[in-house]
Length: 66
Image (tube, rainbow, N blue to C red; front, top):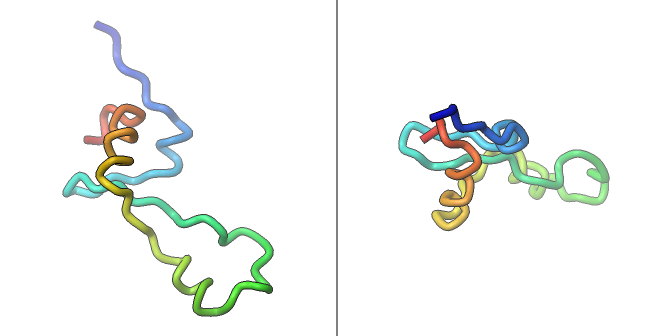
């Protein structure tokens, strides 16, 4: 049986933790930052965790990460 392919676009966007949770960088931090408040930009810095439903979808895209 051939190797399964990893979806490279998903591999660049998501990281899987040792517990099996999927982390991702929040959107909205690239440009047009002047109109966003400091609090909003500060909260966008941190990685966020996908919901269990979305994690199931990412498992298909990243077969060797889980």
